[in-house]
Image (tube, rainbow, N blue to C red):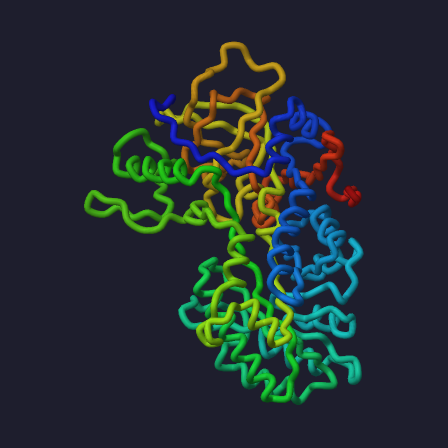
Length: 477
């Protein structure tokens, strides 16, 4: 069905990625060599993102460390790029640790986060990596396992800050005294480096409250005879998906109208995306609200570092950290791979359903391009086949994109997206900005489909080069 008005959700794209997608034959050549579907990663974009965050820190604090959160993407190219840039890495499993060491990371540049069992703790103790302990049991086990005279570097993650939703991670604030007592009694076994936190929320006020709480705990640690030197503010820095906030708002308005029966239907199967319909009105916050964000990670970090802390006479966070000789650590993942990955799939067929909807089936599953149950609210990009089918519809058309599994839920877009024409078999569909969790978090081999390969894309002297992600080698520009 062609809409009289075609609301769109244009995706923000890095200039390098946009140039690659727009280069005639570039996407098709990558798929021809490595197969469809495929995940394409851009380590040069990763490096630019990293440089921008590093610049904000360098301008404000005396000492800092960035640890790339490996869990955001399994790509080797990103890990190699992080190593080449001289930063640290945050790993959350034995396999991620192996990935980091294979790329050249030494123990002093590795931090291990997340919940850790007995077996992993036994492997970590004595290696020199920094263990970011999640709970008192982990801290007790590290103290018991650590050899005397070779203290294990440890950060203590805390949680339970005022105005912040309860978290299953971290030592609750009311249990920190027990941690300090344990740390004070285990100085020969544990090198306590400081406190850490990680918030899922991107709300600045929540992060500021967490920082102030950690500074109070740091003073308590000093009083207990400890010498913390690190304030770890975690990750969770936001991404910017949309290229046009006004267009995003217009799409959401049209979607809300459609839920009320006004205008063209825009959702599959009556999906309301978290909106609630009551008394002829639409209420609530949609599940895709993060896609409305317009504040990028660089600005978010700068504003956080410049925030005046009421508990410290209004002095900026960065100033307080420097005055107290605290290194500021952070663990960005999404922020570093933002706009550094795309996913490509080939159109297999197009069909009309019983309600008149147009469904475009691609050789990809929802779980290999969408994190968990989220709805990705930016438009895919149509890359026409080299020899388009004669008579193909050239007008903008609203479609749903469906996956290849024999499951009703395998819809890649539960919201209608408008493409410049109706796709035909052989066309390629590019899903923008899939580097952060989209590629790996929910990926499964349902129906025995192989996982899409990862392909690294770089540009040198105006020419694009592609290689298997595992074969990527950093080159000095």
